[in-house]
Structure formats: C-alpha cells, structure tokens
Length: 370
Image 1 (spheres, rainbow, N blue to C red):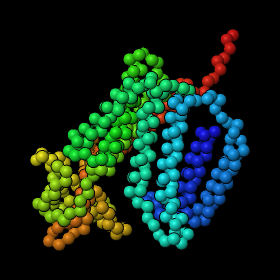
Image 2: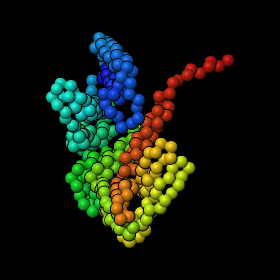
Image 3: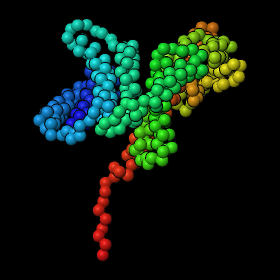
Image 4: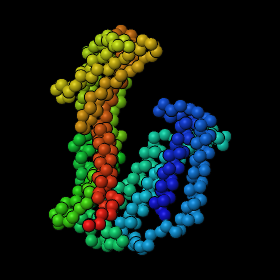
C-alpha cells in the first residue's frame, strides 16, 4: 500500500510542477511558454487524477498489505524510514516553493525563502537518511539482531570520522564544519557499501546484478554528496576590474589578464579575453572568455570560459568594458563540481543494472517437446 501511495504522489507532483511553470504562477529559469488557459486545464486534470487516485486508495488500499510481520530491526523497516525521510525532504522543497505564493495571496505581504532554508533543512534530513542507507544492506530481511553487524559498524564509525576530517584538510587545507558533516555522510555510505561487497566476495556468496546495481547506486550517492559538500563550502567567486597585465589569486590559482582580441564569427562579432592561469608558478590553462554581439538580433551574449578538471573547475566571464582599457571580469573556483554529475551517472548505472537482472524478466513457457 505504501508503494502505491508513493506512486500516486510522484505522478501528482509531476502534474503540480507542470501546472506551476506552464500557468505562469511561478517564473521558471527554463524557457517554458506561459499559457494560463492551458494551466487551468492542467489544474483540472491534476485534481481529477490525484483526487480519484487518493479516493480509490482510501477505499481499496487496505486490501494491499504485506503478509509478513517485520521487526523494527529489519531491512524493510530501514527502507520505510528512508522513504519517510525522502518524503519529508520533498515537503521541504514544496513548502519553500509554495509558501511565498500562499503568503502573498493571503494578503500577508511578500516573503522570500532562500538558500539557507533549504541547506539547513536538507542537511539535517539527509544525515539520518545517510545513516540508514549505509546500514540497510547489512541488515537481513524480516528480522535481524544489531549484534550481528556490531563489529563492522564500529570499524565504519572510526573510518568515517577519520576520513571526514582528514580529506577536507588534505584537499583544501582547511576544515569547515558542514564539509565534515557532508564527508561523514559520504564516507559512511561508501565504506559500508564496499565493506559489505568485500565480505560477500570473500565468502563466495552468489551475488546478482541487482546487488551490484545497489552498490553502484550507493557509491554514486556518496560521490554526489562529496561534490556537493566541497563545491558548496569551498567555492570562490570574485568580481574584479582587470586590464592587460593585472593578476588575481584565487585559491592557489593565479589569473593573469593578458589581452582582449577582436573576433568575427559567422553571425556575430565581439571580443575574446585571454586569461592565463598558473598554479604554484606552473602553467595550468588559458581561458578564452568571449563577449559576442549577434548581427541580426543585436543581442549581446557572454560566453564563459571553462577549464574543467577532476577536482576543480575554473570559470571566467567577461563583463563590460570600463575606462582606460580595463574590463569587468568574473572569476570562479568550483571544487569537485563534476563529482555531482559523476555520482548521478553512477546512480543511473545502478538502476540499469537492477533492471537488467534476469530475475525481473518476464518468463516465457517453453514449447512442449514432440
């Protein structure tokens, strides 16, 4: 029954998001066409589908129930706990999105729900989520005892505490509390996933594709959390005034403004700034940040220069031309940004491995011999 309710909520939220951006109630960062009439149709469709589904669930939901009684310390209970935490995280996003609209419609004035609200609420919901996610694969279905995995948990606790403090210090030369919290979550998930997989392989336990899919997905989440923790807390953004020969240092990287050259493209003209980047005196990259004026639309567009790497991305954007040959330049240092996307790819790979498991294929009857 719980799985059915989650399915209803997922589809209903898709309809709600479509209504919000297509009706013009919310201004999206994406280029969606605003059509209030179509928005009212989507709203009516959402009320019909969601209301009908919830009514049917209320009437018939009691007929769909598990026939197995699970104890509190079981994999089913831990999965249920994480489902509840994910639902709470979804409600945080929904509340933060709709509260300003409701507040304004009630005549209470305009309010803004910003990044600190989401960061604070999400962090403290994800801490217990990561804790249960790491322990879940170690616990048996139906019923289990905590003492069966006590030694492994203690070893994971010690390893996690050491790595969560050591890695930020080694990689960024300083420790920020929220980075340590994020790394603790990532290390806890990764250490337990790898430890349990090693135990299975060493014992010669037969493992399915869906199991390896679960391991890949858990490691992917750990990679994503690592990327979020570092990029959120160690990113640097600087707006500077630069002319030829000027230099700015951002986190061991020295940006030197060389020159601005005129460029002409097939349908635009403009300028490109050459910005050399060195680290500890060694050449690292040359960024080409462009400012384009398109001939037909007469629109001015900024083409940011990006130098990507495994542990950091460097960005440079050319602003307006100032006096005496100076330019406004925006520089970014973003650590571990690509880990966020790499973790997403790992999670997608895990999902594909689970779908490819032969146990979930439709069985076909064999033709009778003779």
